[in-house]
Image (tube, rainbow, N blue to C red):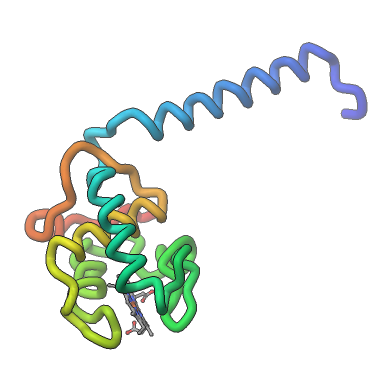
Length: 139
Ligand code: HEC
């Protein structure tokens, strides 16, 4: 369409705005169906930067270790049990000192990884018992 009618342009504009505000809303509203709390992700980000970023890089893009975000993450973890991620984070990592990350920090780091991969936060904290048998989103 070379010269779309003005009404069409306005409709597109309105659609864009409503999409943007829906997205903004879904980010700020606490989601009872979420996987972890925002506080866990904040603490996880700190622990990650301290113990993991040297190999997986600050933006999780991968370096000495594989990327932990996007396609690479979902190739490994889509539909897998949370325990699969837990064993990587808590048992086999960090590569140079496996098992050295506390349970609390491991859970926080997992919350941070889920957040970076678009899994929603909620009101119930992620935990290292009941949640381990849950299946991660299939994405
Ligand atoms: C000294 C470098 C190093 C550090 C530090 C490190 N990793 Fe890794 N990580 C690796 C390497 C190399 C691999 C790939 C080999 C493997 O899976 O055993 C890996 C694999 C992983 C995987 C599996 C990813 C996949 O797609 O299979 C996860 C998850 C992970 N690391 C998380 C972490 C977390 C969380 C931390 C911090 C607590 C951490 N790593 C610290 C080097 C490191």
